[in-house]
Length: 247
Image (cartoon, rainbow, N blue to C red; front, side, top):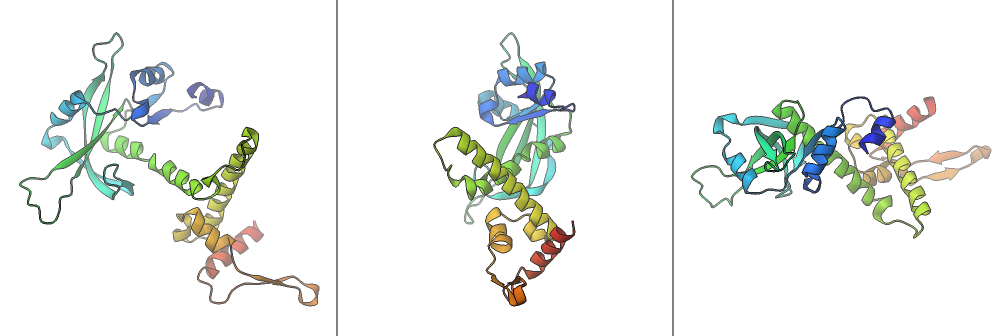
């Protein structure tokens, strides 16, 4: 994949981001050999736990995410946490160990309201990277992968709920049309100039901008589209209609 990206003209820095399934020394060495950086989640083990425990209390830096991220343990949305880093080596006893930065994010563990705690408890989530960004920037960049997960969820809630055929070529065409329709929907949402619609899910856009109850009439052989009265998204559709017909 990295070789293909270079052949397609990608000349800048490429960062490979992956979950714990890709957090292996083989992937890291491949990234280093092909001139790419990596940002990978490692499976938690006693060595990683010891490395996290050794981080001093004064090493933690507050971080505020531009958009709330989903906590992998509780499913709750969090926008504030603390991050720190330490040096860690993967496969230290092998002939080709990989030494890089272990960046750790910690958030406060929530307790029941009737539970008294002597000191705050933390939950830790770490990833392994050789990027040169500062700790906060590296953490924010690593968490951006949640954006694509939102896109996947949006598509699965729509045209990718199931594939229509048992023929690979037909499903490939369906996937291409799905990507085209998704991009068109996001473009329509952007043209409305409505912040709420810019970040809305596909189902909301289909309901408010596409599946509109209307009646087509032809007085004097002139087609007239009668739209609903007191329509909540009338202004957004009008702005969209004007933008499409003037560009």
